[in-house]
Image 1 (cartoon, rainbow, N blue to C red):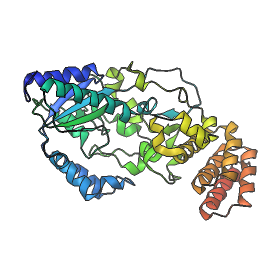
Image 2 (image 1 turned 180 degrees about the horizontal axis):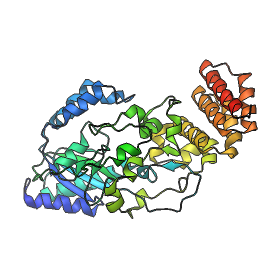
Image 3 (image 1 turned 30 degrees about the vertical axis):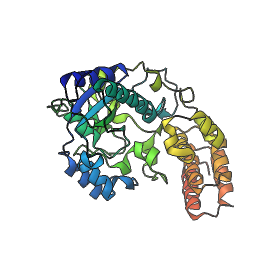
Image 4 (image 1 turned 90 degrees about the vertical axis):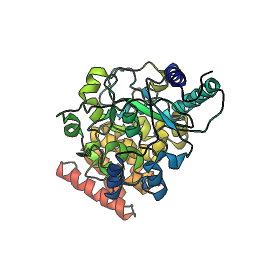
Length: 386
């Protein structure tokens, strides 16, 4: 049994975390974050978009001091898990899903492992202690905590980058009522003069202060945003069905050091290997719940995932999608989906799409949807299909 606060207990915590599947482990103190001003400015400028929960007084107070979350906190264990799945043969044209979302929901996977870690720590310490676990779920500035725990630096694309593993790493934190030995903060910024991530972002959402304008980020647009994807940004979504990895894919640190994981939890589930775009356009509420049970894609909800599939179908120009898109335009109850279907049909450039749009115009009552249909018909006429 190791006494609380000992180097032995710290070493045990790190070894046990690695045994449970965490690739990176470090310890930091619960001191207030030094980058809080960046977060406050980000909120003040409205760059969090519809994520109002990030801007409440309570959320801001807790991010300003981990002890506001847990007054008994004496140290914070910060952990990282590589999630890049093994590569699969590419099928073109096809929709893409961000690497982290292809397997099981990491919130569930990491929480289960963190509870096992806590149980082992309690046994080793010989006493229970207060704790809180988080993995992208709590009011903490986790990338700053990770940098302070020595796991890497915050890159220009806003991701934490580890020099041995790149940035395809999920972070988790455990606030502990134990005194573990803190690690030294990661001392270097190794992005240098590289700007590949900024140049590669399809929507120019990456800002100079190493934050994102969420309102333009494809990950936000396809996951967090619940309403329209702005027409001006829909073409830039490209083939991204859920999330986006573009700024990570071009990062030299990932090109050199990000190795695929063998962890079965993060391998693609069959429905996403590769995504069946035409099937997604026809998915029922029942098939959605069945196929994506335990998947991060549940976060978008069916209407969000269907909206995204519609946009991708329009961007990929799939003539085979006309029937499914026309069915959505003419029969779907939700105006949001009818509007996006009209936009997608306008991009397909085939006579059948223009015919479906004319039929919709004769019966559609929703002003917003009619505007999308008229714009799409104008596009079809300009391409000679009207």
